[in-house]
Amino acid sequence: MLTWLQRDSFSFPPLEQALHEPNGLLAAGGDLSPQRLLAAYRHGCFPWYQEGQPLLWWSPDPRTVLYPHELHVSRSLRKTLRQGIFQITFNQAFEDVIKACAAPRSYSDGTWITPAMQDAYVQLHHMGIAQSVEVWQDRKLVGGLYGLAMGQLFFGESMFSRVTDASKAGFVTWVEHLRQRNFKLIDCQMPTQHLASFGARPISRKAFAETLARYLGEPDARWRP
Image: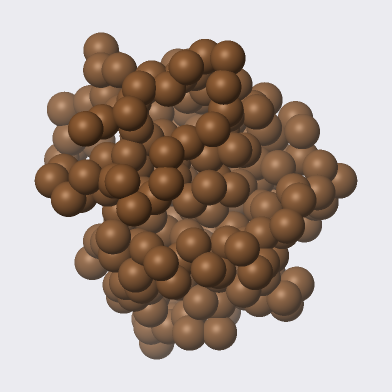
């Protein structure tokens, strides 16, 4: 039975109670307050829903992750990076990045990054927890990504690209940046061929929860790249 969250409580049901079908659906309801969002990520779940649906919380099994030291970069992408055709910055245009990630895609009828979601993650950005990567070309924003940095873990949320290899360049640069700062794992949530090409792979929900317990700690609101 699906658990409905109460607005006056930030607790979530045990991850083991997540449904098998659809895979990982753990709870519904609640809100997108910073307190609840941080409680969700600490617990091992994340919000994902379409406009018009109730707020849904997920903890899929297996979980797709990328270990920074396992990052794979293709020869062609390495060549692109060496050419210096992109300029990459961190946390210079968070709101522009999340709006671009929310824009309609050719392969989807809608977006899960609703206006309410955008507002919630902008709040987390102002708290120093949500981070953005911007990719520029000729002073135009052509790609980027955003997510949450908590403890020694990064929870990736979404990326976008307006020109070939833009989001890839930003992602690779960010992963290398996190590796140098001793981050242990990047949560990619759900599997895609795109992420698999970088070395992302599935781990069990139990292993993911153990990683949270070991490396999450308290989010540092002062953390900046």
